[in-house]
Length: 163
Image (cartoon, helix red, strand yellow):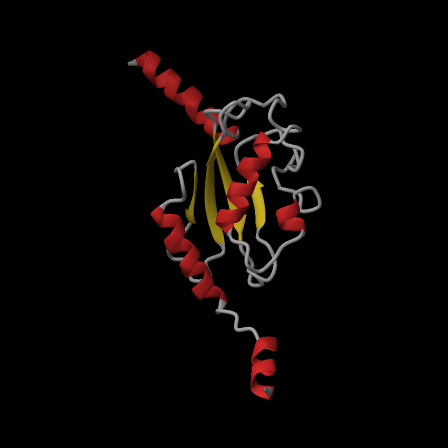
């Protein structure tokens, strides 16, 4: 009896890198309908800190057809603490700081009420759902892309004209 009550009080947590390797494998296989994906920025990063996520905007919203790029930074205390999440693509959402692109934990419940069981996949799916929420589904959106992407697009158009 004592052993049973003791084992119910003890929880085993996988080491951080095992957890991140599992998430990497899941991200490489693809998620659901393919409108959300993620992976590591640098395969040589042995600490597995920097990740890139992609969300394709949900239908019947101002986000429909847009592709949003995000950075997720998993510090050494992940998964006990949430990753820092920043939109690289410009987006207008109530939980995103318009100046920095950071998802504000106080305005995004998944980060604000973080639980160890949550994953980067959960964050991306939740952000996609948030895009469909009444307060976000019709908000005016800035032009697609971030500053660098817009410069590249202009350069590409210029190259096409020259050819």
